[in-house]
Image (cartoon, rainbow, N blue to C red; front, side, top):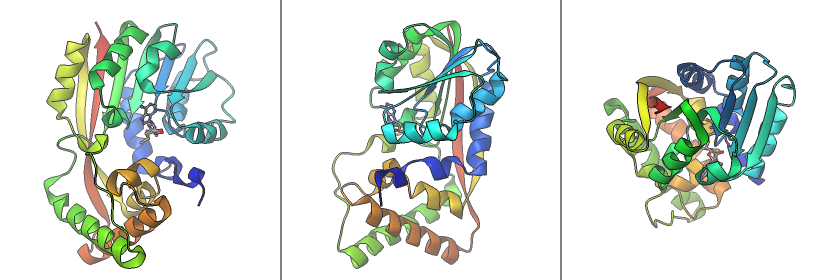
Length: 272
Ligand SMILES: C[S@@+](CC[C@H](N)C(=O)[O-])C[C@H]1O[C@@H](n2cnc3c(N)ncnc32)[C@H](O)[C@@H]1O
């Protein structure tokens, strides 16, 4: 399989995922004519939601930033028909935001990526520098302390146990456990709030929503490089992905379930 087969594209097209990001974009209060950054835009699913709310206003600008050239290529394909607003895609690290965006913006949206950032304090300094006074920073994540509902513990334990056993039995491989990957060092909602306030951002709204994730969602996330390598570091992507998919299917069958609940944290803050 080629690297472009392990992007976020399939997962980003799941209906429940679109709905929860649409909720955050609505909470951000985007209005036509704004300059907006879609931070870690990936394959463009959130960029599309932002554009829908800009209603083709001529002076609007959306800048999508992501470190992955493969994801950006797919975002350009996904948005090939959205000619009406000015969209730009820039390959870069979110940590270098203020170097990429020279003219300040009204809104920064950061969907499903903040948990990857090691130094969240430096990131928020960049956000603060890049926003206009009164500008909006909106982010969401399902990798925070509290994302797992109590009743889903059995699902994760069984899935991971089976996946590791499948990998060993079928390929003779084991994950190479090194440092804890960044997405596993999870902050509480209160820690996020305190960090925002420390960096000159006032909390405007916060929500935790419980989303019912179907088997297709777990299969699609098992096709995404960052997820796979977070769980099975050092294992070839195709083999790790196959083990994750086969074992999640069996886990759903054994537990006789059709969905697994997962909490998403949404936060909107204003630059003071
Ligand atoms: C889970 S995807 C989310 C994509 C998109 N925001 C969405 O919700 O559909 C995370 C994205 O973050 C990007 N990413 C991770 N760390 C990054 C960094 N330090 N700088 C820029 N992009 C990063 C990855 O390349 C990936 O496209």
